[in-house]
Image 1 (cartoon, rainbow, N blue to C red):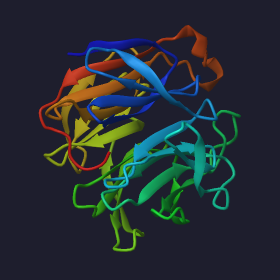
Image 2: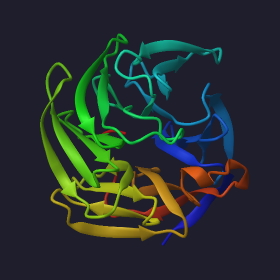
Image 3: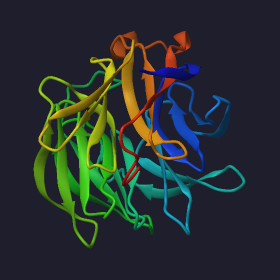
Image 4: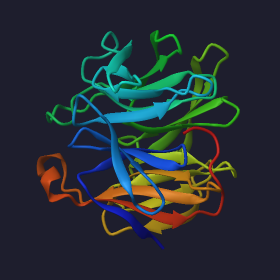
Length: 281
């Protein structure tokens, strides 16, 4: 059962639990919002592109936010300005989608391959490793519309949601941050995963836009739990005081050609989860 924490969004994406609040991108507006558990929210930063963009944080003691916008990873400064952190343009010029940062400060960014919003023919994308010093290296290709990503608590495994592949794929993470031993972590049948997160029992929650739900699966694809919604679910993250609140960003979806951010159908939904958050994000 879900409850509505916040409504009136254009389209919420890239949710993260950080500093006792939920942070997310309000796509179509360029806003980055922070929301407390009573639904009070504020605009805390802006993206230079309205869609797509994503956020995560470098671990302590650094603690800076990273913002993926187009082919750049930007870093907000204390005065609110955005400064370059990494340039991904040498990998692909179509722009990137999601980001996840591990416990060592390595950031993984996926996407590229084609411009969805321009209606281009789908093509495989990439995963790029951005090291703490801002150097960027492609570490995987052949990604079928890379979407949400998650990293296990021991920094050993990256799980990537491949929306067009309708699967969750896993990679071993090497000591240098490189990826190896690609494998199918879960075949999702006909369900295309969007945003994902991990829990302490080793299960993955994934959001489904056409399925209008979030699904909890174990490695191999067994379905453990389902949270239903009345609109497309774009992303999810576990958070709250004990990590057992599932936050879901949802909105009505009529395809790329039917996008109308002015309708403001976006919501943040909350539901209780059986296991707390683990890993990254």
